[in-house]
Length: 502
Image 1 (spheres, helix red, strand yellow):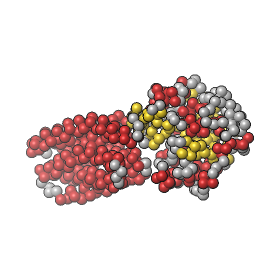
Image 2 (cartoon, helix red, strand yellow):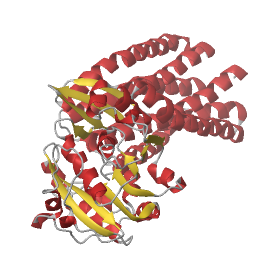
Image 3 (cartoon, one colour):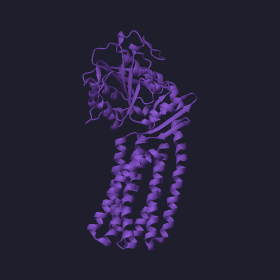
């Protein structure tokens, strides 16, 4: 074996590891996007893939030790992985569209790709071992394997997903093993006939990556029931903006964030009870709310002098500042000189703040994933309380008291555990149904004492505002555990089976 041939085999180890790990992440991301259960999606995708790799490693023992046999087996595996990497994720998406069993589909996809990936490293190691011995072969192949894993784990979330999207990324991941077949076919004289296969599949997948963009966009159109005006994949999430008639709707990772037909009910209900509870609100902290709709409501108050908005995803704010339908909806709120925007994870950014605020408003997505549960945790609420002025008020969206009653109760109970006085209330938003909010104060607050709402609104009035805090019998607090960083119980509460009725 020449030095060039050896180096190509080691490169193949890195390529196979990088594309394999990236494929695991892609499957986990896709399943999480489709069904929402992030922990189970990644658990099945990663765990199932690794288990299947074990099956592939075991099956490699049935390949003979003759060099040509090992090379042929490896080339066959690569030519199978290349198109399957691209096709199977699209198939999983189609299964979701037709209402098939996603978990069974994910298990089968991970079994197929994982088994093939599990064959690669044993075959490569045995080829190198014939020239250099076990010690050198294992050291070289495994070193490149681990390095490739690092590249794959970073390339998918940082480059492929935000730049080209899910399914083109899957096709690109298939190109690499096909190119590897072409290169090995050039380096090993006995494999010359494989070059055309490797090159053809690589070119085919490149074309497929372009075609699949249009194809999956048409599939995605069917999910939203309205024409899609704008879509993009940021580093954090999938953003989709639809329009039907005069109304637009924003979706993040498939979840509806607002409809312009009734969002004013939600945002007036989120913002104004809290600002009314403070005698003269001057400094306001907005967490999330990158669409600018909550900001629009805050800026109606003439007493407000400073508004700091913390948003994780710059792409959301970019849309809110530049896309005409969103600029119209938020009334160009980001152009107001009182507004300061900071980007980052609110959990981390808040811990670095020095200022205190009269009102803190949290408008985070529903806590249906572990990564979001921390934003509803005891520790985070303790941080927020430390940044409230002595008579300050905190308010957070509280999920649906009908579809996720225990999540609604958990938010209130967790705030009570921080020694807040809590005041849960609801607003009816046609797009969502009855929606819950929790207002928390360090000093007594009596909603019935609200006599004036000194700003212009479309939904709220001073007369009706106290009635928001009168909860129906079936919305009353339930017995729940406190949500903590170590024990994020709110995720399971949010996944209440009532959501299947929605």
